[in-house]
Length: 60
Image 1: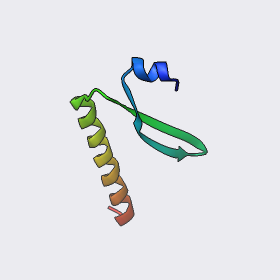
Image 2: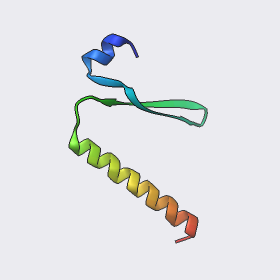
Image 3: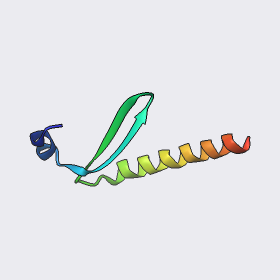
Image 4: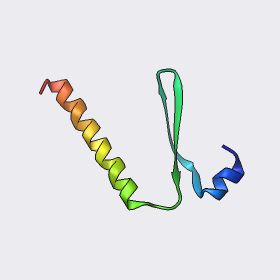
């Protein structure tokens, strides 16, 4: 990602999450502009994923 794109789109280049999924490097960058609806959706999805993993581990 180049510097112009980062500045034009108000991306926080220091605030990111990186992971490797099936030999593919995935990087998620965050915007400097908060969007509470997006934040709420992401948190709900994370909680759902966590709940599903816990159910799978205990066999419910």
